[in-house]
Image (cartoon, rainbow, N blue to C red):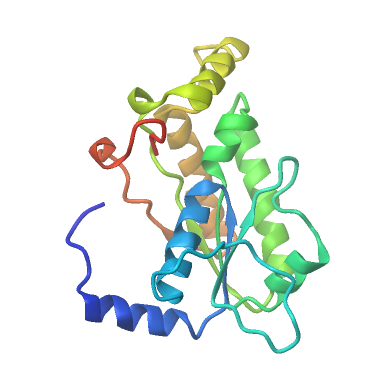
Length: 207
């Protein structure tokens, strides 16, 4: 969001280093996009799906994505558990998913939900470096279609004075929980670098 794009040689060096890792992205579509971006460069600019596969014996896959489950942090299939167990790095964020689809009414509920997720991921990936990406700020003025409808419906179901929904007030509450969790759970915190950058997002997206 700030600074200039990396030079081609800088990007090539970064990708070569990342290829030596086994990075699992867990969370909502903001992390899916990052995994897909890395897979695109890994495969010489050929599109590839980024979902974590059933890992075969001896197979190395540098990057893959594991979506947040609707009712849990992730689907606890044998394939997902194997990918986590062999991961060298686990990157987590599900803030926008929780704000959009599991809106709570107070900060403590967000903290409890996210704490459960991070604890589960640490237990499933004991040898990994754990990275927590702060939730993206949002740009409600650019929402249309289904996402706009979700937010409108949610606004009716929650007391407006709380504001802990898919809004930047809600994002601030989630980020506060994320900062505390990263300290208590020994996660490396990474900023989303999205504050004040609504000019960089597209209509219908707004992240």
